[in-house]
Length: 327
Image (cartoon, rainbow, N blue to C red; front, side, top):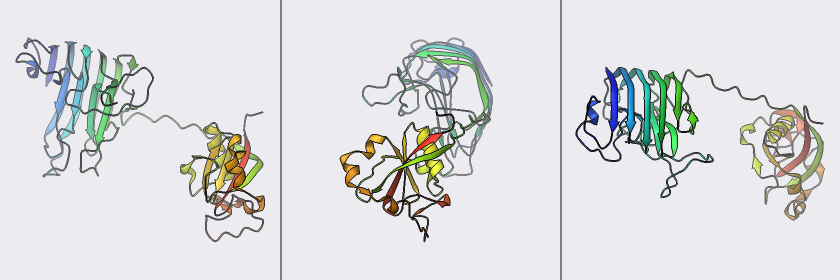
């Protein structure tokens, strides 16, 4: 099915247009642009759809594809819609005011992007909502320019297989590509919610810097307060001195610390000289235990390297470090 040569005007009748645009003036939430909706339990197919040469002014969302319409528990869980080969190309819309039948979503902090004054949330110029169990097999966006007052450029949301209510997640379950797409000042579909096709290779994670301990700076009783207040929970259960130092280096902190041999935190040198930290100071032998025979991984030996001493139960070992490439 092809929708071609569509001129959209929210205050005009239908002339050579998609039939959903016919019938006189439309309310402000009317989608316009390219639109379909389905949901779990409806079944059926949406396939081989082409939206081509769409232009005009005044639509809500320029692209509004929703597989979450009426999202929630369904009576027929086996009736999963099948979506494939859907294209939008040569779209040029202005005065887009946001969202159509979509929901308001929290906008990631981004300089220069406006948000709704009443709710602190932003409306989307274009959105595609998908289901994890039935990704769109072939979604193609080509030669698209969208301009409007909507608070955010492109939104993707999804329901996961385990979702039973209306809660949504930022994810695009679709294969395909987007070429020549510009929405306001943003190129592509990654702004502001990092939307990406399933076939897009993820950006490689930078290798952590190789760091080594240079000096033990103190031992602290942390049963009453935390001396270093930036935790690194990703290292839990595999903490080493070097790994904690690398994590703090990446966080642009100069001091690392390990408490209970298993909890890495980061901070600044000044945090160790505060009155609160001074009051919690303990002898270094309580953090670098000479004869360490740990009964479990929360005592004295680092959880990720049992040959290293990493504080003790209720004790924080703070240390400075130097990383490769630093002078």
